[in-house]
Length: 328
Image (cartoon, rainbow, N blue to C red):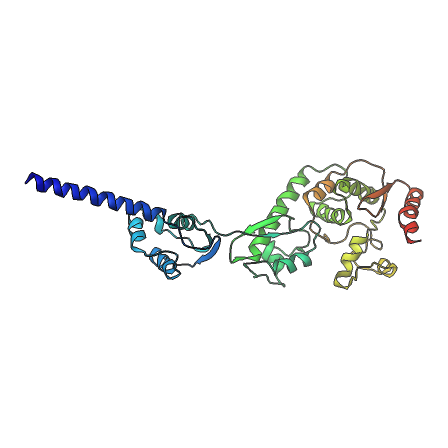
């Protein structure tokens, strides 16, 4: 009798040892996919269906062992819908990635100085992003009001998941711009020639478009502020170009400077009615805290930098040096 009992116990130990080894082998078994294979887990997909899909693709040999493991660890059955990047790591590690919702991430970048038309054109072409934008309701859709959307999208890279919406990405950009502008406005200098944060945003967008060299943003801001404080017109080409819209052919003409649009700062006093581009944080900070200077004029040197002047005589000499001489 003792021999029988010992034999049974021995078999139980052997069976348990073999079972444990098989369990460990299953846990460590690799998913037979090419590295970085994308796979979509659709809403309502359960653990068994997922395993069957992988088995049909010959990524796993059978499902019953994984079903046993799932009985031992029920958290494995909590699958989150989305697009995932599968790897040749273990089956279990790939399932845990889905449990944790670690989806494939895509990105969309708003570039400093882009205008609204350019941003909308780019986001309509973004990968794996639903275009739910309504052209006649854009401001309400993104800002929640009827304010012009130009200038309100903060330049940055925004990450999103498969089938997220374009409006959700742009809302995040708008929220970041609002937060950045609010914080900057709270620390603004005294005696600015504009009285609202929105006017500062307009100025920042002009600074952004005038600046070829990032380090010159403060001096550009100072010159523009000095102009407004002395009742000079801004006389800046980027606003004229913005007012021309899609009719601008890349060459600004004398006629363009003479023709009236609400954005032609050679013809209007003060700021244009809206921003003309998406300004960077640096441009916003320059607009609300310009350095003290006597500069009123500046002219491009042709290398991205500018020659700044305090008098018209100095400015005309700079124009002759950097523009007229180059044309002759």
